[in-house]
Every structure is written in C-alpha cells, then in structure tokens.
Image (tube, rainbow, N blue to C red; front, side):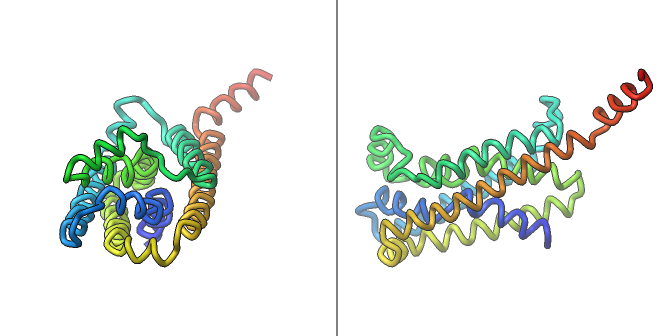
Length: 218
C-alpha cells in the first residue's frame, strides 16, 4: 500500500490532468462527445504504456549507463523540482503556435501532444524510473507501482472526460490555482527526492570507505 499510494502521490501532481483539461478541450474543438472521449481513452492508454515501459526498463537503463540510485534520485528530484517551480508560475500554454496548429490540423491528437509530452513527459518518466529503483528488483513491488500508475490513469481519464464541466466549474482562475497547488506538491516531492539521494550518498559504501581510509591515514 505504501508503494501504491507513494506512486499516486508522486505521479498525479506532476501529470496534473487539471492543467491538461483546457488544452484537451481546445485541441478537440469541433469533435463530438464520442470522438473526444475516444481521444481521451487512447491518450490515457498511450500514457500508461509509456510509463509502464519506463517502469520495467528503469533498472536496465541505470545499469547500462552506470547510474547509482542516489544519483538518479538527486537528478530526478532536481528535474521534478524544476517542473514544480514552473507550475507555481504557470503559463497559459506550454505549446508553441506551430505545435498547436499541427495538433488542431490532425484528427488524432491522442499520442502527440496529449500522451507525449502533456501526460507522460520527462517529469513523469523520471518519477517512474525513480520508483523503479525503490522496487529493489522485487516482482510484487513492480506490480504495486504498476497498480498506482493504473489508478492515476483512471483519474486522468475521468478528468479528461469531465473536462468541459471542469473548466466551466473552476474557470481559468480556478485552474491556475489548482495548478499552483499541484506545483507546490511537486516541488515538495522533488526536494524529498534530492534529500533522500544526498542521504544515500552520505551513507553509501564509498563515503564509508573514504572516511575509514582517512581515519587510518591520520
């Protein structure tokens, strides 16, 4: 349960479906309700597949590039903190005019820009890789993290399906306020990642060996 809720708490703020809702509505302008719901479903499926792939491959990526767990946590924490800081001062749109025009011109926006990079961007991927390092190779740990990803996917899907009512209910100011709240939570998660990584470095075998050798030299 700790892994499941930890995954939800780390992923949901950084994916932040509330900030994606206005973009989703603008990109699906002119779509019928059935078409819009279909795009939401496909986008969430793509998002889930992307995050699960990085969950499974996270350990292999770390081993291939020779990355340590504390280093990965520090790097992921810095990236997540940057995302959180950016959300505390949200912009109306993170997409360029060219990207928006291309998305509007095509009927299927489920993979790009909805699933990638809006829902499963670098921040979400780094969180998932960080969670895979917490699993410590145990099969059930991966299952619990995957369950957390699926719960987040269900929340995102329901939010996108209700995007019309959500925007009307909260309004632009309400959505910006929600984004700032999510940004603060993400910032806290990122700082905690950095703190955990630094503690991992300070209590690692390399530091212990250095201290022992320094003590012996004296």
